[in-house]
Image: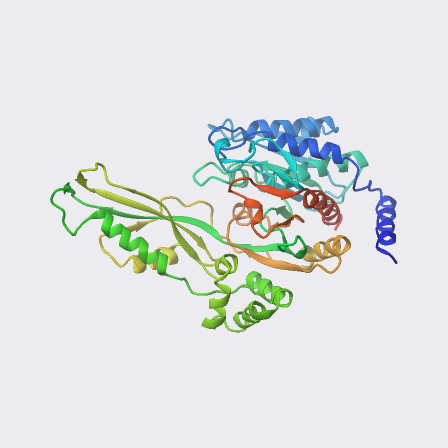
Length: 466
């Protein structure tokens, strides 16, 4: 059968099952996506509650009753609210599927960007704007899914829930997913949740390399190095200088590597990618999976910053503050050390190791804030993976599906401990640079967004009828 014939056959099969064409509602979807991107949801000047309210209006316009659409606003956080919505299922005994997305975005200054970060711009095959990739494309797809399902009269076996939240992007801010897990656990209860985490990989020429599925993620934890001192006049310097103690300790962190660790996620990733990348890198991946203490193989993989981060706990200095006057010896010096902790490793273990690395009694190491409990990653069972593989192979024949360990962290860190298995599955393919998420001129390929919309529409339907 030709490719055209295959696509026509798949379209006919979809229509026979009551689905509309994947092209249906594209204009409406783009309007939803545009409205989300152009609603500023930064912590400093944005309003997540407004974004959630606008998405709720779209659901109500599609026919969802008030009882199935709720705006929640945590007390004392009027602009950090979110949305919970549900399409009821036919089997009250079957647990729901939860579509989870955060709508807040990283800060973006207009003067630094080539284009207005809060205007959705289509240019040279890309969508540009803050949040176009992280993660308003998927948030808009989730809203669009509920609208499409309602229009079709789709009655899933399992209820399909939507949660749009705030606070994922800013350490120290109220996290909406964490708030829901604590205050509205029953409303988001689900057999599984799908969110961000990892995407599909494109090479430099835009060819698809692999579709990744988040199997585990690191835990983000800040530690503080601090030195206090009696200080004095700068005209009479002494070796016992708070800044000198701090700088030496921070420098030691820069040279320290935590040991390589393997779990099902990164073992599966390197095993799968070894066959794809081949050559020296592929051989190194195979060697590390066989022996994580193979220093030569580790050194090869460490040249790639993503692979380096996937292999171990990492810690890096991110902020420094010191001194109180230009003509005085410093009385206090502080550094923030941001660690991404390997799954299964405790904060206490990392804290103890940082104390050893600093190796200076003048430097205290502390945990300023604990954000979220530690939990084991959700298991990647056949129930989870088989639908992903099925839809991926329909859409992108020959593109492998591989598990991955995400060096960053998503809102899965709040839902997994609450007993809701959460997976990062997007169907969105991104460039090798990640589309500049968190950076200047964030972007994502237009084709990727539309294909991701189709992928997630089909995938959620399969999960909902399992």
